[in-house]
Image (cartoon, rainbow, N blue to C red; front, top):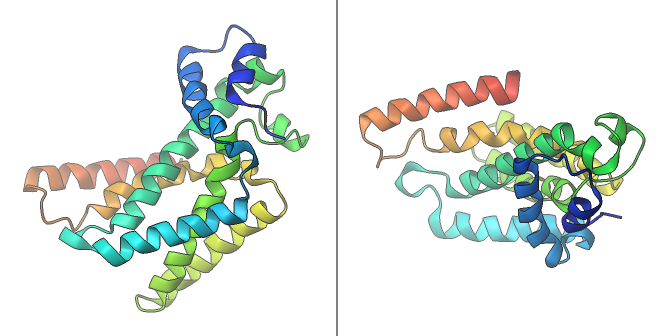
Length: 204
C-alpha cells in the first residue's frame, strides 16, 4: 500500500525541507490519478507501445534517438527525485531512515518509487528489439535490464531499484551526441555534460 504524497506531507515532521515538499507536491498529482494502485505490468506495456509509436514516427530524426531520450529524461529525473526523498526526507516523513526502511520491507515511499522501474521494464523491450539489428552487446543489455526490472516488478518491490535509475541522467546527453542541429560549441558542451553526468551518476 502506497501512502499518498499529500498524506505524507500532512503526517510527516514539519522539518521536511522545501525541495522535498515541492517534489511531494508534484508526486501528489500522480496520486490524484491513482498511480499508487496502477498495474505495473500494464505500465510496462503502455510504455513499450507509447515509445514504439515514437520510434515509428520519429526514429532517429536529426540524429537523435527520441524515444530513448524521452525515457531517460523521465526515469533519470524520477530516479533523482526518489534518491533525494529516500535520503533527505524518509526519516522526517516516516520515522525510519533509508536504507533501513527498505530493508524492513515498509514498501514504496511514494507512487513514483513504485512506477519508475515498470517504465524502464517497458522501455527495455525497445533495447532488445534494437539489439537484434545493432549488436549482441546491445541485445544483452536489453535482456539484462528487462530481467532486472521484471524481477523487482513481479515480486512487488520496485521501490528498491527506483533510486538507481538516477543512472539515466547521463543518457539524454548521449542521445544528443549525433544531433545535427547543435552548433559546435554546444556539441562540445553536451559531450562535457555527458562525461560529467556519467561519472557522477553511474560511477560515483
